[in-house]
Image (cartoon, rainbow, N blue to C red):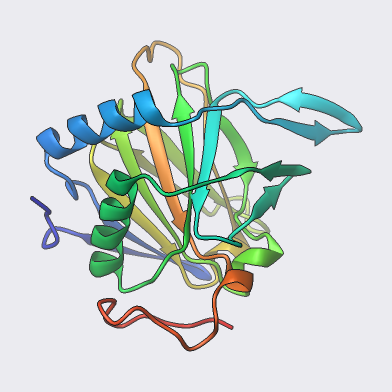
Length: 217
């Protein structure tokens, strides 16, 4: 069962957030976590920092339609064919947000020692104003944002099990975000970020079940 009523809209300088803290029921979230934890082909990517290869502090995987390839920080992720449970979740997220997606990046945070540093999801293949829908499963982790040019402009959310966060507008141009390390956190978290690789989509073609979709070609 989905909770589409109790959402919060957060307006930031040059960006928009929309947050559903109880998007999935506890039972649905637990079942999906167990399935993805066991069946996802997790890998630990290496990124290039200051001329050297460094393993990221988490595990990841990339799912998508044919041609929806994705790269970041010198890493090209191998596209895995959609898992049916992920496709079902994608349909639910599309119906709730009004945006269509053709790919998903999965991250597995094995404990509070795993993290992702400050970054923005602004790769060219994501289009001019990338829209990212983030579903969290498992242990609560902190999500932080900071403005690129206004140091005092920050925002923080705790992302609970079964929550959905939508990042839209020009947010990726003006804001950085991260999931910091957290001492004392021992549980695992899976984060699924649905994206749209524009090079793989014919502009103007929108799945008929997605209401209010906004093309950005």
